[in-house]
Amino acid sequence: ASKKKKKQNSPLALFLVSLAFMYFAKAFAGAYMKSSITQIERRFDIPSSLTGVIDGSFEMGNLLVIAFVSYFGAKLHRPRLIGIGCLVMAAGSFIVALPHFLQDPYKYETSMSHNTEANSTESILPCLSKHNLTETPDVAAIQACEKAVGSSMWIYVFLGNMLRGIGETPSMPLGISYLDDFSRQENTPFYLACIYTTGMLGPMVGFMLGSYLAKTYVDVGFVDLDSITITYKDSRWVGAWWLGFIVNGTVILLSSIPFFFLPKSLPKQGEEEDGCKKSTELASGPEQEGFLFIPDHWRLSFALMVCSLPDFVPSLKRLFRNSIYTMIILTNLVAVNAFVGMITFKPKFMEQIYGQAASRANFLIVSYHHSTLLSPCNMGCSCSMKHWDPVCAYNGVTYASPCLAGCQTSTGTGKAMVFHNCTCIDTSTSPAANMSAVLGQCPRRTECDEKFKIYMALSVLGAFISACGGTPGYIVLLRSIQPDLKSLALGMQTLIVRTLGGIPPPIYFGALIDRTCLKWGTKQCGGRGACRLYDSNAFRFTFLGLIIGLYILANMLWGVLYVKIAKRQKKLVLRGQAKKNGVEANRLSNGHASISIVKYKEDANMESTI
Image 1: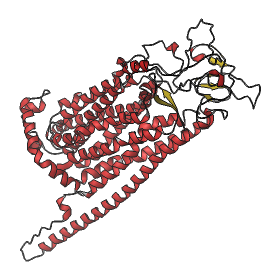
Image 2: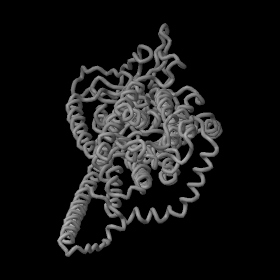
Image 3: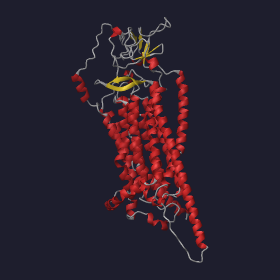
Image 4: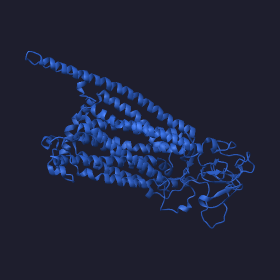
């Protein structure tokens, strides 16, 4: 008997392990995409609002198919649909990485040509009084540049990310419902906890890989790294973002394999095999175990889909009449808005607020005119106002370029280049101060380290508290709806939350963050590129203010939901006691059973005890 039971549980165990690994793989890919947002923004010279659209394309792809997959997928071969979705996700990851191989090597914005020849003794003169700098755009050159390969390559990232969203669609509604259908009811919370615990490892690996590749130059293996004059701390630096998508695409591809070997249905966990034939699939045995798709099976599936069409709208009406379900959707919608906006731009927030000291206070000397960056000390240098080539002076101030710092001479090559006789460096406090500057922005202030530790501690605490409600939230959702609407309910939740909670936040968060930019970069073809420097205070108040406000609203809605669930539970308990008292009264009658059936309004929705 024990061998028989073990044999019955082995397919469910395989599905559980496969689904957990797939959740890890998709979370890994999703976290890596979030960690690469800044790199993608810099590589394609686009504003944060547009990177928000690119990030939201994942939810757009999910939106295209989620309703049909959730409803009709429950009547098809769910494990195979999940496997096909993994293949689509892997293809999307590879398409996201494709622009790197179609573009020319990355050329970062600079105001001068840096000398990289080690044996050269030539000195570069950033500030030349006799140098005439013209910034009149060449229309023909701009048109040729815009037509060049790479000007709109971000569209590949958009489409690939959308394909990832389409492929991810079956995993949650079909995977969770399949697990809940064939496992014991009391085991479902434990299995969900195992899946989401494994899935939580994905973001950790994704952000770790993103951190490592962010320090690796984008064209590693294709260019001479000694010729690169910027470091990973520079706002023009672009990491090897494409390499991570190849890695996570391969991982997702591997995760798809086990799903093609699983049957359409399983015996209910804990039941004898003879009593479980009702749950087996309608197709023959070889069709259940076969790896290839069989035409007869697909004809049967298509027939089931056609027969189910008239029931779709009535099923939706039954679902949304459930007040608990509707309240859960609304609460999740607000919370997901805050979470998606936070996770999308959190790397940028940490970089701008804690990763550098440059802010409006120490970005420019008081002597600069804020609109033009000019002052008497660099007025005769004919400096470009568009280019961003920052240098750090020995007084701790970052200047937009060596020319705007008034530097006259330079020594060294590559990253070791040092500029001297910089007339704009303030020497009023110390006349003997060093008037030299080095490439790159000045390092962050020491107090940023302490504040960053506090920020990370609060982030970890908040993530832990939020994660504690993940599994109970799913259990409340699953137990508050009819069994036959389970897949549809999960799918509609995903559809609504991802449509209104996944697509808009990156866009409006990005648009508001763009308003805090202090210095915009310049595209090779002219025009505004990616932001190089933000106003730290405005960035902080905008970013954190939005997140805190949305989470406060979400917690208020959770309170209302708790009250509704408590009232519903109390009604169910009183109803059960009333029925029990009625049965006992009937037993005391004169041998005549009197059974009365009372239908309540709530019974129409068949909301389960939570």
